[in-house]
Length: 80
Image (cartoon, rainbow, N blue to C red; front, top):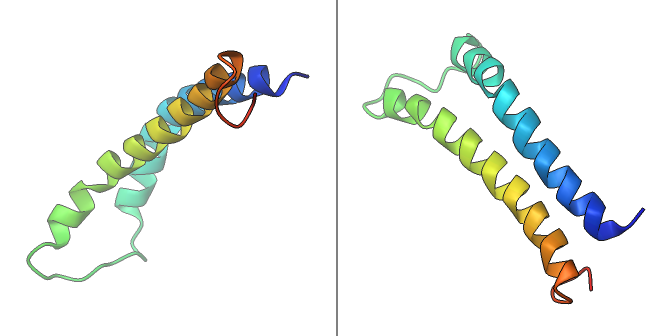
């Protein structure tokens, strides 16, 4: 299969699966009792950043894969 098409499809799949599974993953991370980060002043603020970091990572990976595939169709980037 063409690597450009595979990169685009994997980007779409990453975004779709990541966004659908996001609520489950974040709720499990929030309720896990073994992952205590302490009781200092910013502990709750750090726990509030988990959803933001998760969704940002999913978007960067998904859009990055799609961008690499689309750049290949424009004869630029690593998939020329």
